[in-house]
Amino acid sequence: MPRTCSIGALGGVALAIGLIGSGPAQATLALTPDGIADGFNLTTFVSGYPFATPAGSEVYGPLAQGIAPNGNVITGSTADLKIYVFKDVDNQTLANAISATPYAPADSNPQYAMTTAGGQVYGAQLTDGVSVAPPYEHFNSDGTHSVIPGLTARNLFGVWGNPINGHIIASAFQGLIDIDPVAGTFRVIAPQPPGFVDGVTVSPDGKTLYAAVIGGNILAYDIATGALLHTFSGNGFGPDGLGVISGGKFNGDIIVNNNNGTVGLIDLTLGTEDIIANGGTRGDFVSPDTSNGTLFLSQNERVDRLSCGPGCTIGSPLPAPAVPEPASLALLLSGLLALGGFRRRQRR
Image 1 (spheres, rainbow, N blue to C red):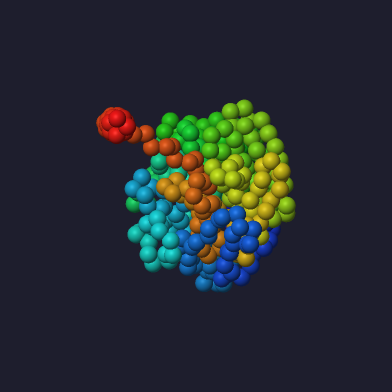
Image 2: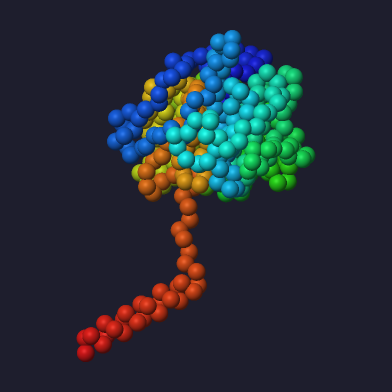
């Protein structure tokens, strides 16, 4: 998901993709007629990220997000090298942040990929693959962070929390990997495909990894076996951040944040992509808001929020139906029995 990176020939590819579709800094992502008809809703989470350095060169502002145990949103900005903590409400600016803590860049590509896994926030700085290999870290609710002990995996681009087991699925130098952040261990699901994977996401059942190749297509892998299950066309849009819909009429379909400033809906049955939002600057990171089922979408200078309406979520499973307490069940049963007795008496 980085704006730029350099890992041999990959650096030129990533830079080229970063420039595709980079529109005016103040362009605003908006739903298309199809997106409106499909029932999606698009709002602004945080705007006003710095978009240029003092020298005037373009800088990608917002990074990925994670939902802290206390419900606040942890995120970062590469434009001013800070980790921000926000309340989980819309229409904020950087001035509304609860806290803003500077972080030290590990190398020339100091962007944080973050995710929520097992109710905790994890992340790692992206890396140019030349100077250093930044470690994975655990984030506290106040935005402070510490290295996960013993974990030797090194991040390349995207990360995503597996909703079933609390693991982290990541695109790393070692390949597409499955990280156990509690044990500090990882295993390789599959080797990096040609072109390298950028954004990743996981199906709500925790079985399938969807991976966006830089400037290419979207690949589906079996997480348990590493088998390549399917390839979906990226349509030349520069697919990047991904999120799977759970529930509703688009259950199982994929939301994709494209580098060309559009947001697509991929029908996994037909393999087609419908553009549900356009007019953005450059789509990049996405992150699930696990507290309400919406999806954060990063653009150059803002973070938007996409929702799919009642009965569905994006990037996280539907909440389990509430199970009544035993006392509540007993009370309900007593009420039904009493009502039945009342009706029988009425018929006499």
